Length: 615
Image (cartoon, rainbow, N blue to C red; front, side, top):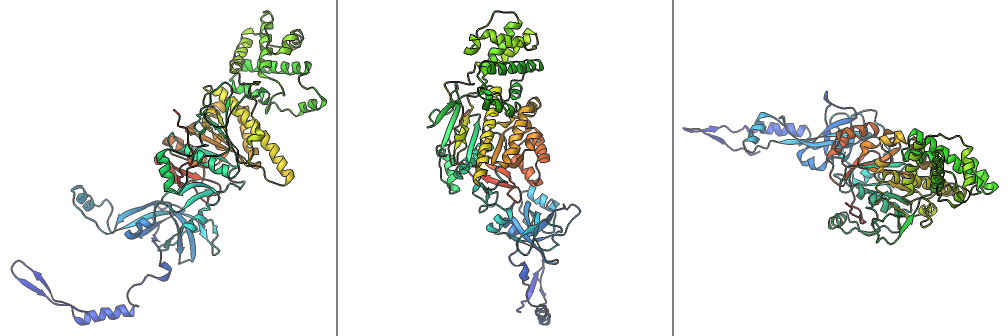
């Protein structure tokens, strides 16, 4: 080694420093050679980006702290999947970065007085620093690359390797043709779920988040992809914003977002928009707009009583009138008219469906006549022709029944029924009911446009009948598929503003209606029928509804009390993701699906189709 003399300049003179003895340098070189030469990283550590650290009193079960050089900090962003090779006990673990990476100065506290003093006075002091991150252990990796629940922890100073995008997909179990978007912070890792696995989409879905969080983008993107997979989709659209998804996206900001993801704008083919008779469609220019009316006979009388919010006294009178109406239909040979139809009576469950061929107009005529007879008023005009022409026979049927005598209660019930009858949405000759067999055909997208309905009661009547009709048709399709040895067409129902239909307060008052929904949810899982509950007010969804949901897409939720409630109801989401929920940007979401190995934060893909922007 070459050594030069070193001098020290003092105030009055120059003082020479003796050079290092040559034999000392030779001795150091000999020691280095004896130790194996200059340091080289062991083979098993090559390619690692971090090392595990010793545990501290504040360490958590299931997580380890890893340290990394400042050069590697940018290589290990949040939600990175890593492999930890615990060399001492020859075990391998797979984990994910849930906190960090954070930058820490070497040998100093981050809030050391010297660092604080220099910063606040505008000076620059950049000590050497390193990175620190918290990794949650997802599982132990066996020799065949299968992953099992971890029973131990990686030992200190174990090398940490970043998984490749393909390895991340394998570990995360992101597979299938339904694409949500990219793992946040991982530009090459897509989050996909299968559409042909019974444990995924027939399981029910919750899409929650505040206004502007991106729920509509998520829903329309899902509808577009499920349609391509030949599923049948029904969207209960309370605002009419999905009535333009047959057109490609055209908003400049959305087009730029699609271009960044290498996606093309495109509309959803095969859509049909249904709107109630007497109501205006949200998008009259849609190429396939149809009117429909409800059939009163398809609704359970108990569900109708709950939706109309009848008092106990009114419910008693409603059921009395309902029984008289059934006797009148039989007396006037409206139903049943044959032995086969008489046999059908034994299979009718009025907790699930109504009485065949009974119309709201007929029931109203019965209630009106009873009210007039109780008040000893003249015979009223009856709109049902057979009832009016044979009013004396009808009065005899009423006289034989034991009826409450309070006139005000009968008049109140008459008024309640009349308010719904005046809407003219039941049993209309000018609009056919929905043909559910057409709805549940492969690749069919049906949008039920309820924008022009201000009454929550009427909306709920529509939703109740729609769910009942879809379930009945899917049951028939399932039985037919079983006989053929095939799979029925998967069906997904998206319910917008689900809190208005099934709020905590409402299900306390509408036990029968909720039981119908619960029955559809339970039976639907086996029959490829899934429900998606969409709401911006998840605090109004009862625990009974949350318990029906298996898959979740959680957009921004700012209310801490709502987040805490969801935390108690939804398992498997780690604390770091819950903490991020209030600060998610529009288009970001925490996605938790039964097919994924763990929940992840996702940047949702922009929708390729046009949404109707409504006030």
